[in-house]
Length: 409
Image (cartoon, rainbow, N blue to C red):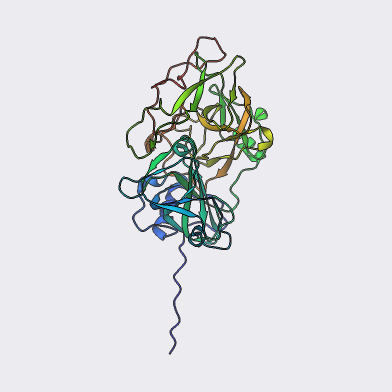
């Protein structure tokens, strides 16, 4: 007698038929309980954000001679040809050197239902220390995008660019978002939502008129290069900085790692080639419970620079203290091959917006201990940050002040 093998039931999430949108925290936790997102240990509740999940480094990092996409192979088979060394991330962890790709198997793995897709992005704190990350999967042909129905492990490519970093197993450097159906709002839908439902973009505390929104497959943000009364507009990474330990657990003095950047006359700065800058958006963003957002890749035809290495904005960003409050966005900027001038208000990045399947039960903000709500400071959570001063500077020399971006610790 032949006994047929019984197939394991497909993991499921309680998503209504035909629904579209980004999965909120309630459904992310359900996905974990159902094994759609799995791990060999318990996934911490604190890692489940309003519309995203923090992913954790596994115990081994592979130092690679090059980056790659696996294509027809599994990642494990492909990496055998490119490994230079193996680093143990357990215990005290290991040092990752600059400008060298590392590959780390993440603790989490996926068993996506056929209708559910996933997308990954670096965490904001990761982008602000100039660490480039992207997820690859078995048989994958794209970074950070995971096809519906994928069953398998997740790997994270990690490339420190400005600083050698100390990392260890369990550290979260990136995030995952799950979604179904057509969730992204068109430009017309973004404009209508801003005008009729909720103000998504504000400038100096006043909603930007709907007919003044700059939209082209996303909503553009401009740079704030007015700065404070002393002309400080942000930070530039120092060269030859010491090791940056991302597992220290206490705020780090930023002075050995960043130096302040001051504007020139005319509210502009010139970016040095290949140097890393932390700047701030001129406009404030307010993400209501019905939406999630992502900062998308910069269009290279608009200038010789790259902005924003980190992209997810969860529902509640800039929202929880009041629907018309808003929070400005920190921008990670790097010029390419030549010095490049940028001016106040210049559009350097854009946001896309996605519908939520349902509003999350907790919003990004103070209730969750979020690090960047209503920020006036570009430094990431790893660093000791300055204190806020009242009153934004409108124009150079007007005597008004705001947080001294680039104030020495």
